[in-house]
Structure formats: C-alpha cells, structure tokens
Image (cartoon, rainbow, N blue to C red; front, side, top):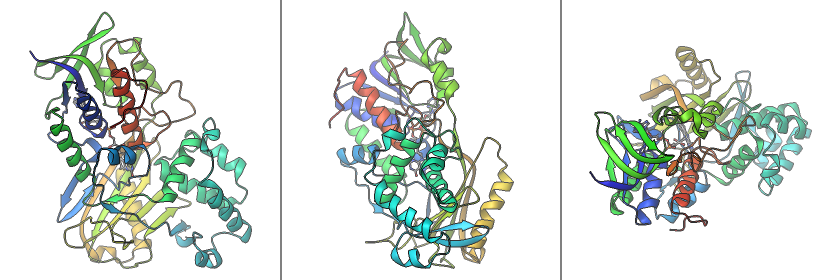
Length: 429
Ligand SMILES: Cc1cc2nc3c(=O)[nH]c(=O)nc-3n(C[C@H](O)[C@H](O)[C@H](O)COP(=O)(O)OP(=O)(O)OC[C@H]3O[C@@H](n4cnc5c(N)ncnc54)[C@H](O)[C@@H]3O)c2cc1C
C-alpha cells in the first residue's frame, strides 16, 4: 500500500490549491474527490453554447486572485461597470455612482447623495478591521443617517457577502469585500471551469495524484495522530497528513469522535449562506442600460455578465448569447417555486420581453455559497489544524479567518499547507 505524505479530501478550489502547494514543497500528495469531475462549486456547465457557472461567479481582487496570479494562471475575463440601479417598489432608479446619475436620480435626497459621495471617497482607504466585532446592521445603523442610503448599503453589503443576515455578518470583512468590489471584479471567460482546468493541469505537472469518483467514508486516527483514509468500497489509503476541504458537517461526520475535537465546535457554529440562482441566455437585451440591479426592498441582485465592458465583454457564450444572472439571497426557510417566480418577475421589470429572447436557462433553487462566514456568534476561527489530532487540517470557504468565499478557500489552503510544512512564513511560490 502506497503511503502519502499529504492526502486531501475534496477536489474543489481549496483541495486543488492545497495539493499544488504541498506538491511544490516536494510532498507526495493525493486528492480524493467524490464527484466524477474536479472543481466542486466552481465547475461550469455548457448548455446550448452558454457557459453557466453554478450561479454568477465574480473574482474579487483578494487572496485568491493574488494566489492564482502567483501561480501564473491566465485569469482572462472582463470587469463589469459599477453603474447600477436600485429596485424599489418595482421601479428602477439609478444609484448615483457618476456625475450624471448623481444629479438626475430621484433615489436619494441631496443629503443622501452627499453622504454617499463621502462614503465612496472614504471607503477605499478605510481600515475595515476596526469593524470586525460588530454586525453589518450595527455598522449601518450607527454610521449612516439617510434612511434610503441605509437601504443602498444593506444591498451593497448583501451582494458582497451573498448573505441575508446583516445582524450576524461581521461588518469589517463585509466592508473589505466592498472595497475590493469597488476596485472592479473579474468575470472569467467561459466561467470558473477554465480556472479549475488550469489548476488541474498545474497539480498534474507537480505530480499530484488526482482521484475522482472516490467518496471518503472516514479519516482514521489513533493516539491523537491521523494515519489513514477509508474510501467507500473499503479502499484504505495511508497518509501522514490529511487536509479536509469538505463542509463542516461532512468533516465532522468523517472523523470518529469529532465531538471531542474542535470539529464539533466548528460544525455547531457554522451558518450556511444560500441563494436561489436564475441564469438566462438571451439573444439580445431588451433594455441595454439595465446591467446591474440591486434590490433595495427585496433581497435580489441581477448582473449582465456579458456586458460590453472595456476593453471587451467577458466571453460567456460561443455565439454572442447574452448571459444575465440573478440571485435571491435566502433566509433559513426557502420555497423553490416562489423563489423562481420572484426572480422571473424581477426579469420582467428589468428586461421586459426577455421570454421572447430566451435561448437557454438554468435555475438552481438552493446553492450554498459559503458553509460558514465571519459572524459575530463565532466562538473560534476554524483551522488550520484540528488541535486534538496530529496531522489533521481543515480548509475551505468555511475555514475563514476573516476572508470571504473563494478567498477563504484559498487563504485556508495556504494556512493548512504552511502549518503542515512547519513554515511560519506564508507560502511563497
Ligand atoms: C451561487 C454561488 C455563487 C458564488 N459566487 C462567488 C463569487 O462571486 N465569488 C467568489 O469568490 N466565490 C463565489 N462562490 C463561492 C465559491 O464557489 C466557493 O467559495 C468555492 O468554489 C469553494 O471551494 P471549496 O474547495 O472550498 O469547496 P467545494 O467547491 O465545495 O469543494 C469541496 C469538495 O469536496 C467534495 N467532497 C465532499 N464530500 C466528500 C467526500 N466524502 N469524499 C470526497 N470528496 C468529497 C465535494 O464534492 C467538493 O468537490 C459562489 C458559490 C455559489 C454556490
């Protein structure tokens, strides 16, 4: 039986990045992924020539972007404009993001517009960490005066965090993500599947063994030390170190006696963020200006991913079909039919006549954007080690130390491998 120095459970972005870092450091590394395809939630499905991510995916200029660039990934795509509309009582009103909308929009009073302009100037330079211990709601209610401006900020921060729980999400990380959003995000050409493929190739080049269709059933340990992985079908893999990139609930299930370890706490404290996603491929946009919509009195968001940005639009279809994506941010109770209906009604307002232009469509009723996030009820930031079991590590979007979504996946992968290699310094490629 082959013995691996590093075995990684899960072949999403966190798993692939961990494997590349470990293999680059000369460790004999294997990745075990239960699905037939690598990529996890970052896969892209092609339907009638249109590239559908599992809901719209934007790459922020954060930890993940930096790490992908360090690895030499191409990251081809385009940034959307930040010109946007707010949807209020079924009407679309420009959010003042430039001089013309500043003077013309009836969305905000003059006082509200000046307050917004002040925040737009201030936000980029702000040290957001001073707000790490308070919620988004407390930040908005104590820092902003204009009632409609508060609605605008609830919508902006909801979009940055993918979450309908301003009373729970820590304000600091959310504001940091907004700072990054204002610098411009990237929609990747042909979706995040291209990113996954580049990571797969890099992993193979580094000698990582990538095994798909292998569902891990248990991570075995003895005398507080990890020693092997048991796959469904009774295949056993010996490993000195294991990095779990599975969700907290699955990680907890895979490890015997997990309740006696930090995995128990991390599982209990986890609050998932879920969204309903509607993506439509349209022959043309009925109303060209309606590219970016924030729901101000309902938790929705719309973006046109193939927007004619500079220097060119993101390529999300083979034949120029336009891709419009909507989210409904969900609370604990969800109703698939109602959510789909609500999103279609939003499209009726934003792009009237869209049904006549429809080429293809994808509706995903409940997608988990993050299995946990920096919230004010957290007892502990998960990982990188499971302190009670030597050689056991966690990574993934939920193992965040303040980062959000894929930035958390990548930053936690780096933390896990750095710790495993016993290097105090962050991994340098
Ligand atoms: C709708 C939506 C929109 C999003 N938008 C953005 C965005 O705009 N920007 C952004 O930065 N991020 C976004 N994200 C988040 C981003 O997709 C995730 O942060 C990232 O893909 C998570 O990677 P991961 O490796 O941590 O987890 P995953 O991708 O979930 O990988 C975990 C892997 O573990 C595997 N696995 C589970 N159990 C087992 C087992 N027992 N044995 C073997 N394998 C197992 C799973 O199959 C999976 O492949 C979005 C996510 C969604 C759903």
